[in-house]
Length: 391
Image (tube, rainbow, N blue to C red):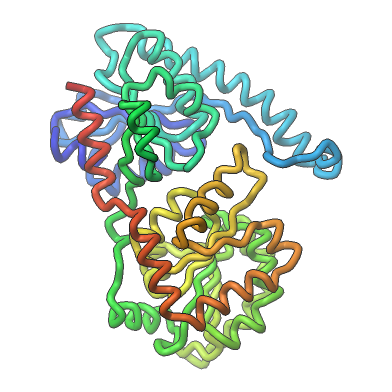
């Protein structure tokens, strides 16, 4: 959004989001230094303006790799997500169609272009856009497209990919383009001197390798529990920073026993956070990062140029995390331990961490290969495409 408003300060931009993320979006627009609200006239009074609007949306819950018996073993998930969740999701989808139709039906208020990013929230908007012949652009972050994007791709004016696409695909589909995934400008490589300074800022030993483990803002239960089991051995070879996540932090609070302080000095070389607001600095301090295999996380690690161990969760729809990780593993750009393998044998994760911690040259080679995935101009590329289609 920032790049669009920099190029076209008087552009009218609307950000449609579902009710769940409305507060996050309004906070983001404030951080971008632009006004937001419902009244169109504010746009001209306060300079660059983004109108944030809520829209109903329905998510279709499904889990890859489930056997018939899993639906009974995981009865809570079956009832909550797969039955009741999908019923509510269906009506949310219908609500999204109605809302999109009402907003886009009057030609005077139709946008010149629609940018779709976010999966299920975009599906009803894209369907109605197609009905009214409004050009739309899709951005797909993962190696494999999600269900909503697969439905909408055929009629998209442009399909931008976060991951590199093959020459054959580009020739077959001239509207496909690799733009990369926009990440915050703070995610950039740090020098060895800066890395040591960051370690010190987080109270870690500057001379000791640092392993940072994160399952995202909400956390990853299986990853946390595996770290719990291997932590005593892991601390023998490295400092450890664990971002347990808002959802699972309380379940991991017993690990605070490893976080020993003497006044303001950390003696144990272990720290745990519920969530860290300076993830770019924390991961910049790391020698090895262990994380899930979401596309944005991978893009951030590529931008930071970090040796990374990916732990994809194989039961997500389409297995997109597994496929993201497999592609990187095939080129030596990341190490991969699948979630089920880690749960069955947490020592496998420990062995992989140990292998990287003890081999600086391997870490550097892996980081170099992963950095080839980064496109520092991803946001600019997307902005150029959007403005080009808008005319």
